[in-house]
Length: 216
Image 1 (cartoon, helix red, strand yellow):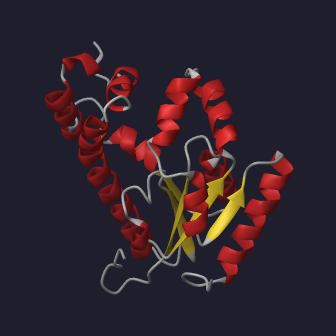
Image 2 (spheres, helix red, strand yellow):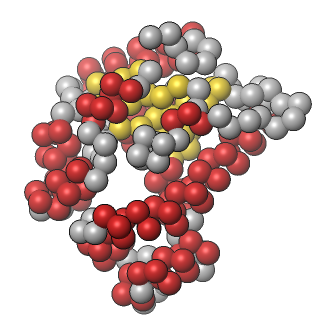
Image 3 (tube, rainbow, N blue to C red):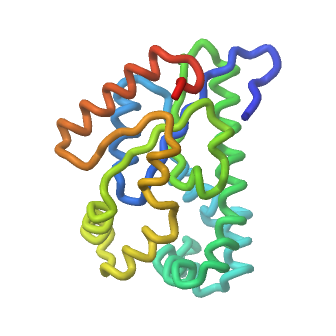
């Protein structure tokens, strides 16, 4: 568990996770619109590999200049083709990026603690929470879940991937059913927007009423 700063009132830490293309970003935006402090690990992952950053230099040293664009930006498409075809390479990339992302999340929560009372709880969107074995860093976990078939359909439509490319990305993560099984709360994103919103609002109400990890 991430400790609070000495003398600070600790903000309750909530992780939002799920599978790729399962609706996490939509849920995070709705939580933010409801006034909940939020942070997005995907954005942090981009920040820690910005041009000139130690993270980007580490990636270039491991994967070569072919994953760096002429303007100094990371070539995500080129890197993706490498790491999703090679599990060892993907693990090496994660070893570069994930510690930097979690350090930024810890720092963010610490600043909320120091500014307390800002909110009773705050939410970090962490796509690979279970894969990185960091669920214990948080007081409770919310999973956004749809069906695997919906993940595949959404991912091919959203990112322009072939079905085999999309399936490789889905297969690189823990199955969505397993994430939902481990979660403290589940937001069902498999139906209409109205049904997703109803499920999210129910979880939001329960988070506001409950302190810490709910009883199973």
